[in-house]
Amino acid sequence: MDHQPVDETEILGVLRGVMDPELHDNIVDLGMVRSVSVKGETAHITIALTTAGCPLRATIKRDCETRVESLPGINSVQLHWDELTPEERTRVMERARLKARDTAAPSQIPARTRVISIASGKGGVGKSSVTVNIATALASRGLTVGVLDADIWGFSVPRMLGVDSRLNARPANSDEERGKIVPEERPEGPGLLKVVSTGLMVDTEETALMWRGLMLAKAVEQFLHDVDWGDLDYLLIDMPPGTGDVQMALARLLPQAEMLVVTTPAVSAQKVAIRVADMARRSHMPVLGVIENMSAFTTPDGTSWPLFGEGGGERLANEIGVPLLGSIPLEAAVSTGGDTGQPVATSEGPASRAFHEIATRIFEEIAPPPDMNACSASVIAEIPVSLKSEKTSDH
Ligand SMILES: Nc1ncnc2c1ncn2[C@@H]1O[C@H](COP(=O)(O)OP(=O)(O)OP(=O)(O)O)[C@@H](O)[C@H]1O
Ligand SMILES: [Mg+2]
Image (cartoon, rainbow, N blue to C red; front, side, top):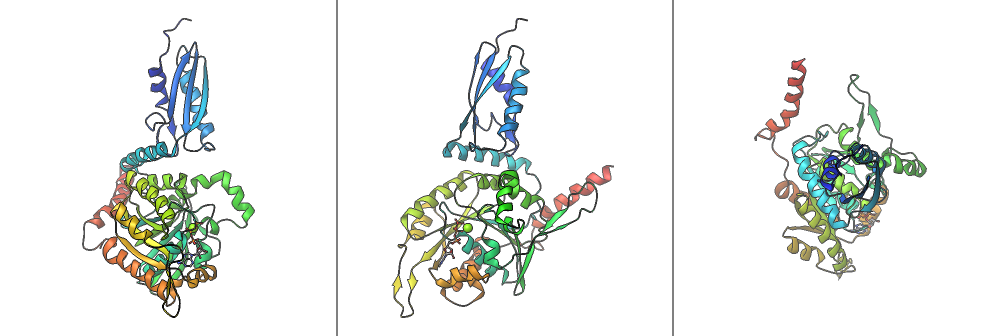
């Protein structure tokens, strides 16, 4: 049968029906369709994925083929794969995040919780140490603090907080509901830490590796949707190094998240951190401040040794126009505290003091939890509940 030749616009039109299941938007508007051309009855389409090994590739492929082949005049589809550049990924994320603001899936994180992700552009600068110690310092004030270890493959939070039992699941109350994972709790003075990490879900390193391919891409989402976090004043998220998929997932799932950037006093670390902060800006995730870690080591006689350089935190803070919340000195107790599961913030000393001072600034000045009794935030927190009850009363 003779057909009008199909043009590129028509193909783009049907490709708009292909959703990236992870980013909840269509691949055309996300900017993932690199090129489209028609030769005879064959459509050639180039799609750029967030990463070459994207587990959703097969789904996207099938969806593209089905839709494009449904066009009269197209017999076959040739898909070519490409990878987004870091800049393109940032744009894709920005777009997905803006969209998520309108259609955010409900997470188990209460609306009143201050969500703070601890990020850096480079590994090993102390994100995990900063996360567990600030969480500990906040909890010691009587607050309930969630710690989400989003470093799915390189988890270190369980060891640093001395929690190692397996997470329990609470059975579902009804057929429609799914069972919920219960966080591991660690009391901290008058307060409480609630910890979730893949390290608490896998038994051995081998199981961890099995998880990798299977469901780790979805793990952060699961931690937000399937964990019964209960009430939380803060949720601190220990981010994996770099600016990859986990960050993108988080930005989409928790539009309320704010970011703290950890850097060392060295200039090289600072340059990387600028990239992270820049990404945060573009994804509308506000940067609350900079924390400098591994600052000058002071010997008992008072001599200061800036082993990892000086001034990187201050420079970075100035550059991105946010406050430097504090500097944590290089101190053996930080590292031994992490190894023994007793964060340095539970003891005395310069590093502990620095962590408590930063926690105080966060609590009093930078990101105080909303006073639910005194402001309209309680109304917002009630919305999901009233929506649910409206739905039930419809039946
Ligand atoms: N202020 C400090 N003084 C001494 N040692 C520190 C300090 N901060 C962190 N460390 C040590 O440096 C190492 C790296 O810290 P940490 O694991 O917190 O970094 P990270 O940024 O989370 O790393 P990754 O990118 O691998 O997740 C750890 O062994 C930790 O104990
Ligand atoms: Mg870490």
